Image 1 (tube, helix red, strand yellow):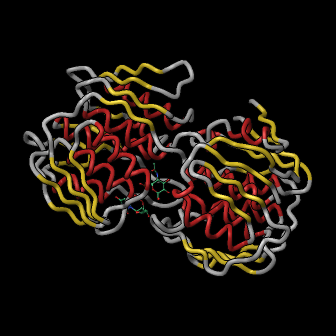
Image 2 (image 1 turned 120 degrees about the horizontal axis):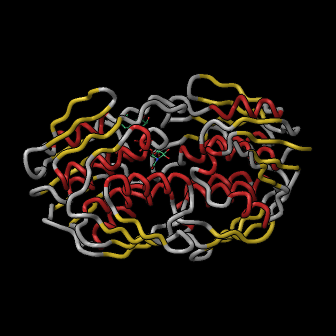
Image 3 (image 1 turned 60 degrees about the vertical axis):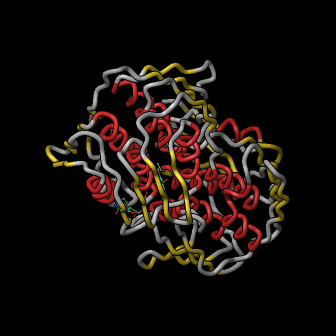
Length: 420
Ligand code: UD1
């Protein structure tokens, strides 16, 4: 297993370009199962999760033609596709559950593996299943698989999600595109990645309209050929903004719309960062002294993203005073805390709230990645530690960050990948 060696402390300086969004690409790729005609998707990030999704589509019968730089894909589906999503592919990535909606909608049956547990929480798929059931899907769970079928086309319905869920909203929207009649989804997640998915589907002739947290979908018989460019990754962008703030850096972060990280930028301004915004880029200049913030709360969009929680915690470790962060989305998303404590952090956890006593001077150590976002927090922490740190199990990072060490090296971080 590869690991990162980081020699701190480092200061980031220069320019960095943001890659395509992993979390927008995954539902868009899953939705290509609805198409009879070829689809072209551009600006895919070259990360492991995208490779997994493309392999899953291939296993279902899609022809995958990747460009030389692997950022553009042309997908051509066979007339007769398979409808079996195996455990071996689904287990490595929860996002695979997003093929259930399109499979059942287009082919009226599917055998999809349940994604299983995950370190950051139980992460069930009950909202996905109950919404699809309301559209006409019958299912049973057997041997870890969802065996689903429907009598003919799905039928539009009105569905109110009991809780806001990104994945359940995406699965239901995709499925409703080819359903008979009108579907109204209430209490939807409205993350930018979901809007990207609906922009993609509408570019192919789907009839999807938004009004706040309500989404109306008028089913169509088929979708047209289309070409679509995926949005930039807001979590990658936010992570680089934190890196600049944390290291007294001066970083131009380009190739994305700064509006997608508004809530996080507001926090960075509060801690003292100077931020200059342009239309498709921004510059962050880190402060001499980081101010603490009481009561940061993760929330669904437009709130502070749970996927930014661990990075913000590293920042608060360096703040001049006591801060707190409440995690409202996932029940067990403080896995990074134990590792940060090994570097010297003073953090106390009470239920879903972390109290961070700032002014920590990190000392380099050997660290273990646990999940995608927790791992990037360890990279940030290693960047401000005195001395050498090694971060093990970086396959978690490879799932979601494109060329992380190459990008960091270019802006002044002493980082090396050790291949094993
Ligand atoms: C997506 C993102 C992930 C992000 C999360 C929240 C992708 C591939 N992943 O994950 O990076 O952290 O949104 O912004 O886009 N829940 C249920 N039952 C369900 C579905 C969800 O109880 O059927 C719960 C989850 O356990 C969690 C909460 O609802 O506590 C929100 O989860 P959800 O928004 O569905 O997250 P994902 O789509 O899995």
